[in-house]
Image (cartoon, rainbow, N blue to C red; front, side, top):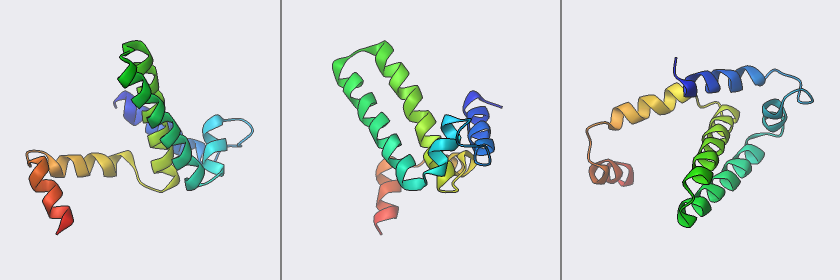
Length: 104
């Protein structure tokens, strides 16, 4: 099991945890909209660090972004396995070709 898979499993387990005992449970209790908002905030922070060229700060913000992406996915009942399956489906397909199939 990869680190990302372990994190996704932990986040999934927090769905039933007491929001006063877990930051993840607290986020999940606020619903998909709040989880999406937090993901967006973290993504913007990662973008800022990428533009600034601060490798260490970008690494930290990227970790925060991945965490909040997994929380948002969990809040929307989309699993990491679902996302990985989609990536595997796209493997070996030109990004241009793949995007064209979504627009059709």
